[in-house]
Amino acid sequence: MAYNLGIAEVEGFWMWDKNDQAGKNVDHHFVGLQGNGKVGIAKVMLEAAYGFGDYDTAAGQNYDLGSWAFFGDVAFDLHDQVGIKKFEVHVGGIYAQGDDDWSDNDLTGWTPATGITRFTPAFGTEQSISFDGDNMFGQILYSIFPAYYGSGLIGGGINGKAQFDNPGLIMIGGGVKAAWDKWSYKGNVMAMWFEEAQAVENYYALKGVAGNINIDEFMGIEWNNEIAYKLYKNVTIKGGAAFLFPGAGAKDIAQALKAFVQGVNFEDAGDSDDVSMRFAAELIWFF
Image (cartoon, rainbow, N blue to C red; front, side, top):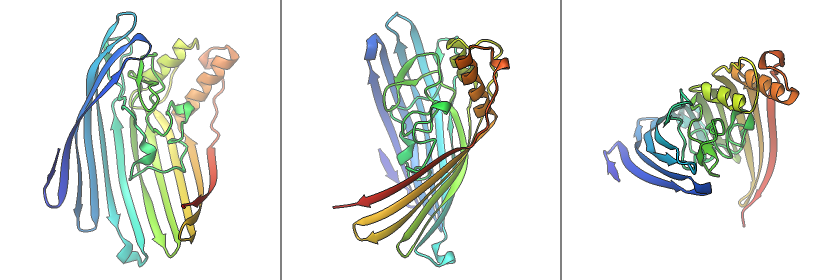
């Protein structure tokens, strides 16, 4: 349901996600508002959504679903000032609520029905580590949300494996989109935090990691880049490079994984701070 305000269009939506896999019964509803507007050289996108419902396990346990998510982005069209076909800079972010108490009957980790943020207009890109199924952060395929972490109460996401007591996400970032002659470029920088790290700590405790598991909220910073050149009308070559600079939370997760593999306490395992890198090349032929 949409209403045009002149400088902006506002839409309200409702969606029902039904999941009855493996004997469980999940009724997950989403309601929200999203808006797109333009003021001068600024383009604004905003969205707020609330997910709620019921989760009944095959063993007869009952849980209540309830979580919030927000997205906002402001892009500035500067192509006239720069003097090329396209030059746009943007800043924005995501807030997705995390579960702060895995032992209660309230599942408050934001769990989208799909959550394929790889294909969203502001930050979405194929040349990314976080959008490509990064298991270190619990990010499922095509999604920035760390929804693989939790206590096993699954039923959301693109493959139905996202957990409803996940740690949630805070992301703040920005980027550039440019085009000149036959060239185009797109790049983003994203700083990411777990909204609640307890879900990650509980995940490794349930895996059998002993000791005082302490996971920091700061996941790290990703910088991704994509450059393309149109050889012919239907043929484009593209290159991508992405770098993930680990934060304290990434180092703690590496330590928990080492403790699990080595069979030692969390405190006795070493961490790791290597930068993750992803490089790609494509030849795209439309016919």
